[in-house]
Image (tube, rainbow, N blue to C red; front, top):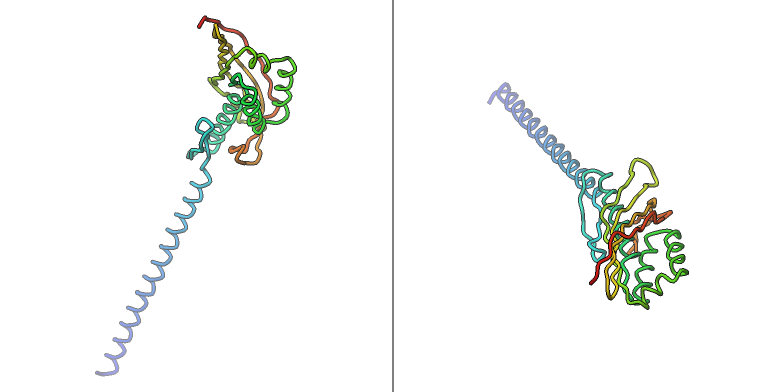
Length: 208
């Protein structure tokens, strides 16, 4: 083989090696790009995960694409659970205190002060002595999420069951909600402040 033929073979081999190198580098770059995009997508999905209580018994994982909507879900669940614990009562002193203690983990001292005022007026003593059961059913939780702390108004129905009759009350309360720290006792990491009952009006009473 002459020198010219050898030179051509070398040039072909060099071009072939160059193409293979470019393909390998391009493939590696493309793979790295795909992995990076997948990691970013996964991280964003993880960031959007929130936890919602299922009737206060277990944690359910909820996914929302909108961060504001996600926070509204948590606030509503937090406020609803607080009202259920504070106002769904049975005529057992220990059970009442257990519910109140759990509610206090979700709020600041304003909730404790409210319950103390009721206690001083004999509210809980009458529930026990008269064998009264009380159930709170939250209808809606309205949130002003455009400003912080979040302002919240809760609308609910309260059923008071006595031995001979059942009374239905229309209940409205206000509070503000701030960020706190998540814990077993407070899974949403929110805190209710300035809790206040606006109205608790009798709607009807019927015999059992």
